[in-house]
Length: 529
Ligand SMILES: Nc1ncnc2c1ncn2[C@@H]1O[C@H](COP(=O)(O)OP(=O)(O)OP(=O)(O)O)[C@@H](O)[C@H]1O
Image (tube, rainbow, N blue to C red; front, side, top):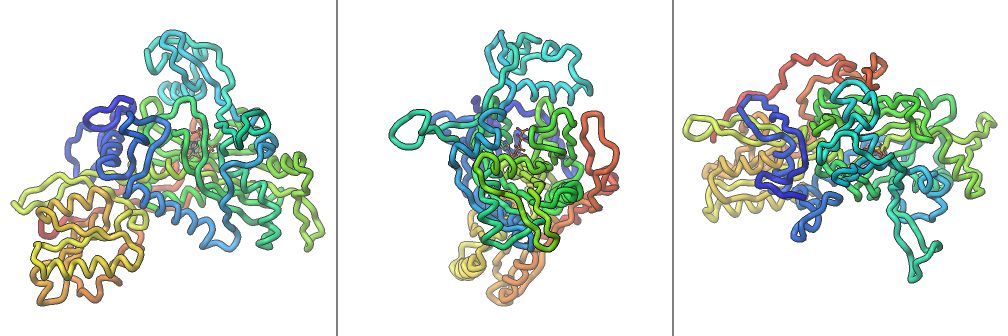
């Protein structure tokens, strides 16, 4: 991968940085986010000292904290705050029979094509989707109309062939057909094979769900676009088991619920849409699938899938029952009815959603400086629940008396399991900038008055307003402020039953009845810079 000065050359499209207070920026927003992610320790290329790789990325100190916070919010929303979903943590390597039964060994394929001019390989379906996105119609002559993204030659492709995406490994000392195993390409199958154990041990009955998250592996033909498509990634999946006949209503329920999860955590609804899979292109297990897509702004196609919400019918439980010989049906004692539950699956990508949260939060605006002018500032408007660092403690000088108060305060706040920065280096304005750039919601300044009045100044990341707070009340103040939802966009009920665009997508903003002309509310800047 080519490394450029401004970041990594990922073939990302140039889209201008959106700003509340406009200032001219020529940099692509995605390039800027990738560069920030590396510079501030969110995401690095794996093995960078050996040149890095497009297929795997490492999460640095801030990235791992952000990832943890997203996982916690997902788990809280899907398991902890509901009475009808329980959690599991299943193995990455399952018996090979699982993948035979699920169909992955035979049909988990992508259509591989190779450019006969430059010999680069691509996915035929992805190129066709990008063509549709650009031209608004399918290519009349199929692949013959599509140029190679690498060398530009038009239509000089091999015939598509099925390429199986399962990553293989061998277990034990002998490498033969018996030792061949697969790394899981999804966390879902671990749930299906545990269905009976979980239902029995947790005394759950339909409608109920089982949630699972962790690493998955796919031998993607074209990994790329930063962490959007990697060969090793993390998923957050939940299988919701329901009585047949109630499946369509539950499917709609989960499409709405999952869409709201993103907007509730601050994602701009204008950057979300639903993609209804055309009937003829549904996966072999699906009755209906709707993807929640985010406007990443990629070259070719702006939109990328964040999460698929599928009605998997009874395909998986029936397949595993047939192959294993176990009865995976449910007997409803109240009605005397026995049935194999249908399954609704919201399947989200953790690492993809992390990228969407970063891109969506990235903003540039202006902040007042000490000279009475304004400085350009980069600010990550992350929801405080997701922000890796909850607050920064900044003593105004390196005087021991101030340092002691500041150190004690930071130490006390950390006892709440909040990540707290302590920074005493450089001008206060520059320290604010460093915290804004990583999305720290609150900066707490310990100044000379603190010694006398036992109070500190707390400055808000978004409004830049400052408040004087008694030292004894800081902990409570922080607790309230980092739990409160920051309403960046008007809210409305999610309803996707409206008109569907030609490509099957539905613009969520229109369906939510959101007033797109309503300005984003960011209070006037104030305070001492
Ligand atoms: N290679 C990958 N890298 C990162 N995340 C992924 C990858 N493949 C899938 N995911 C995430 O897992 C979620 C559920 O997986 P699913 O099988 O529905 O994906 P998919 O439809 O095959 O994705 P795509 O069409 O982008 O290949 C996706 O919505 C995505 O967020």
